Length: 223
Length: 223
DNA sequence: CTACCGGTCAAACGTATGTTTCAAACAGGT
DNA sequence: ACCTGTTTGAAACATACGTTTGACCGGTAG
Image: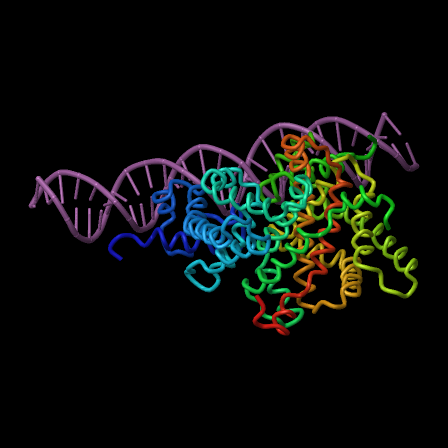
């Protein structure tokens, strides 16, 4: 305990509380009291609440983006030259997320929810931070998606990617609550791995649905 | 102007600001100054900020749920006895939403985003309010979905409904921004009706994907 | 021993929030 | 015109927030 584990205690507490309650609804006083550190420690070590939020994301996202880039490298090498399929691309992403070394068993669940919140809550500073820090793996994922769905027009693909993002971010951002509901209503336990295993086929099927606009062009009066 | 349009001005302003910034991030002072009414008017007319949030939802959701129930009535009458298909059920929902009398053209977009926030932001009071106020049409929609997808287990169907909700709420909530991006990048105009026309086949395809868990049971070692 | 320095602590700061107060303005019925 | 209940107005209220301050502690180097 020679040099402060204060920083880690703050990050641990902040990560959990942010995931449970959102960013604005979580005060520094809640965080510091959960972490059993002094209130001033946050501003001393991180500078501001926003910087703390960035640090929480960076602690997970930096190793994750490295894992992901490597997974993409492996995937492209295995396909030597040919573009990977949609299913392969989605699995590379989800498996990189699931297989990250976790601090605890709820780690992946917590972080999925944080990512969902990042998209949902209007925290301009956070989106800017994520964009300029992690644009490379994100752009690469987009390129793979494009190559995996050559049958789609650019416009149709654009919208379907939004649909995928939405289903993912939304589900993950409330996955704890949803899991509880499921447990109460149907008495079923669910892991994040299971949710992801269910989500990927749903997304892949949606991405590969026949283009309604193309159908409309070729068979304009179909029921 | 005999009896206060203050109430409506507050609701109009609150609806827009909540959709743009979320609930906690929107103060009563922002709302009252945008609405050009006195700060105290909110607590006078609604009682509290939470009650104002409820009123914003009720103003849209009450007529919508009536329209929806009627659309379900029509649908079931047309199918006399046989359960409606998934596609029919989804269209009944989306068309009821799109055809609601709008206060302005962005009305549907604003409200989709609010629904998304209601699910996402941890506002216990809101979820409780929505559940006990609109459980009937919601339960009816769920029953129709169940009858339209008899091949799914209850658990799988539950999650896929969440995925659908997510894709819809997310896309609709930011459809204005997304439409602008699309126009700038690809020079394409898009209407809300078109987005819905693209969304429904995506959702239907996702809902009808083969169940990954069933596959895993019957062919455990499939690639 | 002294001087320093990274770190912690209790306390305070300024600001913004939701809510309350109470007097003034207004409407409609008689 | 005069009440009566309803609606607005400006100001204050108490509270919670993020941030800053300055004293204090425990090593380590000069």
